[in-house]
Image 1 (spheres, rainbow, N blue to C red):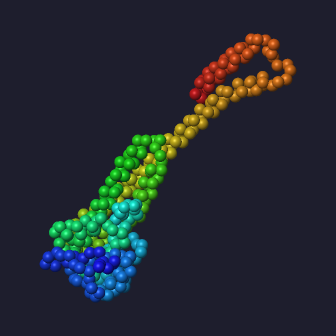
Image 2: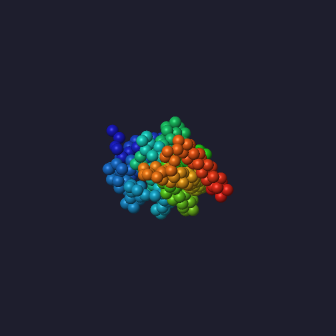
Image 3: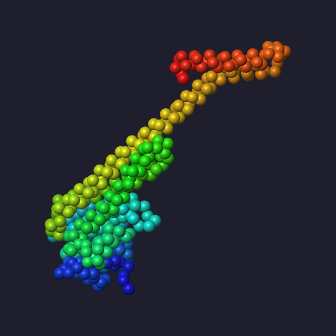
Length: 312
């Protein structure tokens, strides 16, 4: 039975082949090991493999932002983020992939399953995929970025649809704005991590500079798209707020005009509704008709005056 900490392992020697669960002790040079980060035995197995404590802390830390760190002698630690496409999860709650290269061994750890890693493992099983450890690192970066792009791309259409509907529910844009901010929290450091890796360029990746440069351009483009979408969301929200304010002001103004027109009428009807002696026209059958006619004429005069003063 496979231990909970072990997910998969592949050797990239003369041929690419899958490896069984490693025994306690040093790991095989030229191999890629993928471990479950939150399993209890992971830390112990890495210690038994001779991995320094500082490097183990990096690949097992509970919460950390993307970064690149050189460990000397060509060894390095790379921490990346990718969208969380697991069922029941929010994609913008980005999952973390930790990559450690130490003494010829490539180790990656995860807490939640990553489709990018799953695709690479499936390709290897089919006899495709990367043919050395450097290509594994590049493939992980590229596939993480591909899924981030696929997730971010539809945002443009969503914002455009909201822009065409001034009366649309603002909660859609508020939710989208929150998701973009969460993405930007990790995407900007990820760009800096890729740039730092290119600048130091470990020997393992010496032949992959061009692919890494493409990965840097991709994450830069994604960051620019996220920044643009955030600005676009802000503009649409401001426009919708302006439209809503105008509508409220227009309705308030209309109610004020109506109230102004009926104020004299209300005064007169209230005055003539007093049940005390001496009310004019009580004994005249034409009084009500004359009073109604006077009211109509009064409203007409008010409308003419308001029109001339450009209130309506």
